[in-house]
Image 1: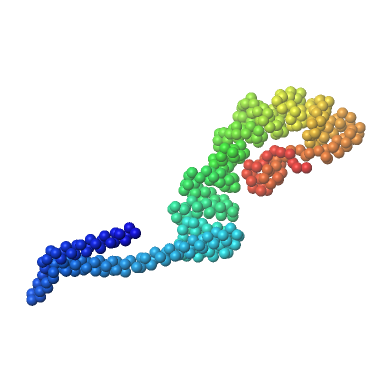
Image 2: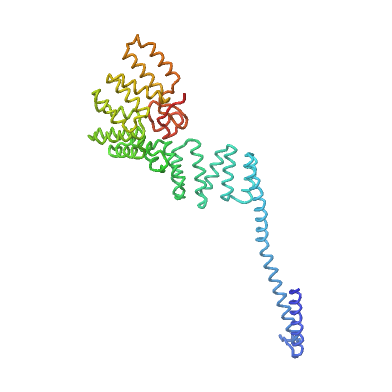
Length: 416
């Protein structure tokens, strides 16, 4: 309604203007040689206005004709984008449904319609990987990494591929590039630490390991690789400080102190390690400091005073008492261990030796056979075991030879 009123007002104003011009009178003359044109003033003004409108219309038509190719391109781009987005949606659905070939076809169509956008390149790489075409996936990831705004996405995909095929040297370089592209990506530190472990570069693995990583194991592994004695000693100390209950770290640090002439500090380290997690290796190193059997009994009593009921403490006291000829004391410790219901086969094996020492081989044969029967039903002794795959090892190692997991070997009871 308002538009109609406005148009009516414009027409009225135009009509009033024409009537006013007619009242003015006068004429417009144009002379050129013998040519003479004369018009009333109102008609001249009206002709000029109509000429202006005609010229404006012609210019607009010309401008519209010139812009027609651009409009056509824009229309085609919009059409292609709509078709490309539809193909992209179909590709996502196909990939989610596990139809890798259909996803690849739809991604190819979307790339032809929309070009190589980061989203399409990433989807193309994932579709190729789902189809098992790693070469095509690599090509898409490399194209993605070549785009500055999407470089990190491409590098991440290349890193996953390198890890999947076990190319840890390439993975190391790609991870370093990815972190330089995105320094705030915290997961990359853990990733670089894992890659370094796979490469058995323990120093680098330690450098990138977080607070929740196996720092004690990595520090000791790095010390074993270190050629500088001072640096190796510092790494062994770090392993001990990171986890006082990590027996290999305790033994390595104490051995270094003994070698450098610090026996008192070494005994303190061994005592602290035993208090945290008793281990036969700690006792073996400590007992090597004194060969007198009676003094070794007192040494063991001192070592186990904070962990008197621990199975390793009871076994150690029994064994050292037996070696000192104190068979009654050894039997007492072993019986106390049996009463807990946690005694393993080492307890019954030592009880058999006590029987032979007290009664002689012939008289003790029947009792020894009874201990052996109980040993068969008892848990086996603790071993170095990989917490990832369960493989047993004769000694601690930084890397499990069975599954390749680093820092997973621990001292634990084996499954029966």
